[in-house]
Length: 494
Image 1 (cartoon, rainbow, N blue to C red):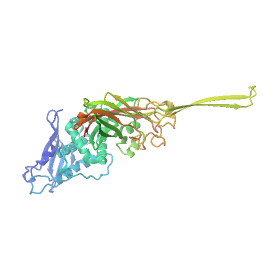
Image 2 (image 1 turned 45 degrees about the vertical axis):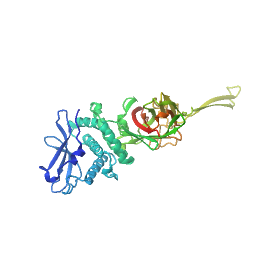
Image 3 (image 1 turned 30 degrees about the horizontal axis):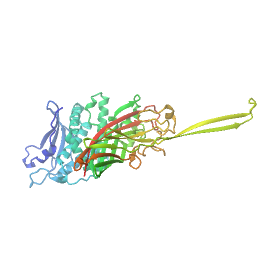
Image 4 (image 1 turned 180 degrees about the vertical axis):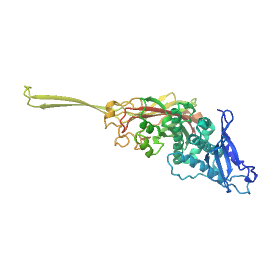
């Protein structure tokens, strides 16, 4: 659906002083159907019996329906030509962010502090992105059913466009990591609810909002990628039937939060360059989108959720004409296998047995196997990093297998009580952390010296698998989901 979204920031900046208003409100069309029929308007209105203003999102029907109203705002003094001064626009921007947070499960208002808006680059794009993200959540939760799907589909196309993605990267840096996580949990809770509703109604799933958000930056010898994705929106690779209703609720309201950090270094030799990259930190968590009380009330318990079972990353220089070779480090050692034979002889007096002896012998095999195995490999000039989780009972890779029925009833299996056991392969919160001192020796590209003074581009491509095996719940249900992402990072050869 084609619709040119308005520049809300520019519209606000150009609003006339109140003294020039001919009516008590000024509307702006912010979402229209293919027939150019207005669906939603943003209206600025004088507050009755007050000198303050309010912004209102209105569903445009015969009887207008107010879906959202801003906090009252104070207009600029009569000495200025702008209706709103910088401080008031900053308060409106914070109002957007706070209301996005309020759609999440954490109802406590966080402390929000931003730099002065005049120091923020591309402020208009960031302001507009924040407004339309709030509008997306308002459409999911507040819009009438007869326009909800249309508005969400239009907004999805806009928010996943190039300009919006660029603005998202800038906004994430302004928010900082703590507020960023709260932002993404609020947004992805809304997306999860909408995807669930669309599937229940057998609607077109491709009309749902984008499920994966990721961004990357390169600075100070560091490449960093951060990503978020609702578990419900990940591709299902294998699944056994449908989970029970309460278990389905628990598995539905989670998201993947990943941080990938690589250190890079350029060493100039006499005849070539060496570009060395090593793993600094790989973190992957599966976090709740709703609070514990709701999971306990309607779900199968807070301990029933997916866990990371495989992480695969690929680093590739996008232009390879000056690359000469690629060297990788070693992978995890193969597990040691110890074979021991225990024999015992028991003597007893048994009348039916003339010898009176009972002989027994046994043979035992033990395997020393770490739950996570790391492998490096090469494809052309791409360096591949792979972390695989293994079942300690039979050594099989978890992401591509299913638990045996014997393991399902064995209370000492590693995936039972997997978030509290002393031998758990995860953090207590259910995630994983791979640090460079244990996993991921460096990889090295040898490059022609003609690259000096240039900026080289690398693609970081990745896949994350999440698996569910029962934790405390008694069920045969199990499944594995997967997401894929790719980002571009840069390296200045100096």
